[in-house]
Image (cartoon, rainbow, N blue to C red; front, side, top):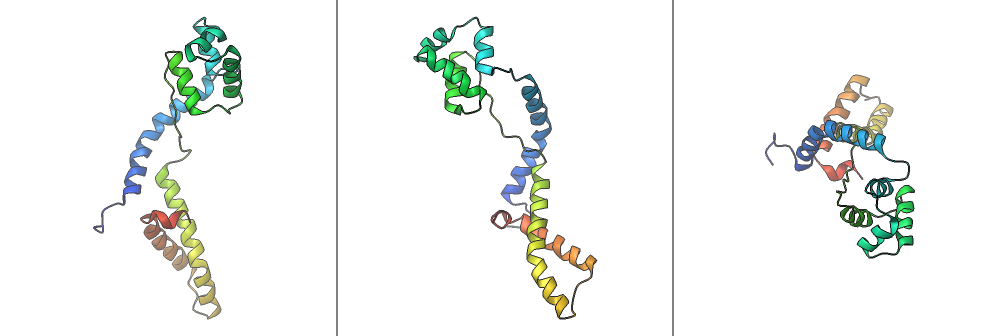
Length: 158
């Protein structure tokens, strides 16, 4: 890989980071709009559809629909079940994992953490031998190593 070329994971992180503001806004809107009884129940009722009618559309017993609604409410429903119910309600299932902070920032922070862990024993040993680094030199070594680690994803998450 050329010296200036960014590894694939860093390019992917930058690409996702550009989308995060819109995703975070959408996630907040969805989180704030979530009906107390769950989306299945809210959409079904808004359509004027009974649990029995939804059950017939899904070829499930009415009690199974009640259980699906309960499972959604207590967050134990599967994505496959949600997808099937959404289709039966002529709706779209929207699913996303939205990072709380930018991925590049997470990668950089983790790289600094790993670098500090790697440098600490060497710095301690050098200090015992009266060859210790100044605080500034130590920070510089950690940052230098962190930049290298950022480019090697398998070293980040061991």
